[in-house]
Image 1 (spheres, rainbow, N blue to C red):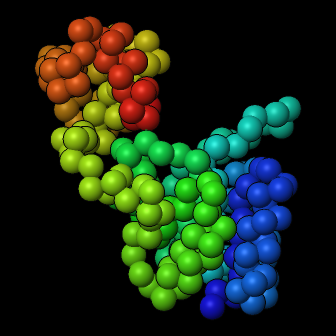
Image 2: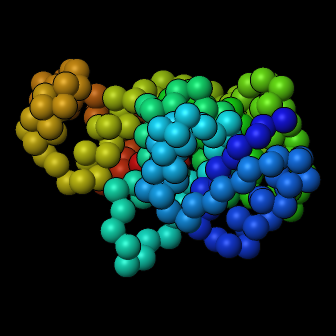
Length: 222
């Protein structure tokens, strides 16, 4: 079983419950972090001390307060952690139920398991921890099994997400083109971007750009 685990969760009650699950699995070293920045620093320090974590269990949503933070979500934490410790096993423990977002966690961030917070979440989390330790891949709560089978968003690519996010920021075509060019995103020509937006409107049956953004938000794409 895992020896050293980090739990990134800002609610004490949930953090304590997760800790109890880990103790039941005889995990000897359990650390907690209420902020994503704090969790990331713990991961980096553990690597520096030559005593890295074996597993990270993280929520996706972290409530903002007076404290200034660089990493504001579990997604950002996972992306940062994977850059410094690519082989770290990761489990997301969240109420998220948007199929695209769950898919992206597995496909883009390489998580090992997703457990939905709910009525049976504790035994499911315990089972997921055991399965991840045994090197099973893509462990998902039964009630969300549809998420990885959902083909409705199969044509959506990372490029489309970046484009939709730019639209949410209110950038014009030319501003988006410049932003993409500076970031090395291809294609970055105004005409190419406009064609892509039109394809997205057709794909989602959106009447206009505002409608497209609303649909994207409802689906959890942005």
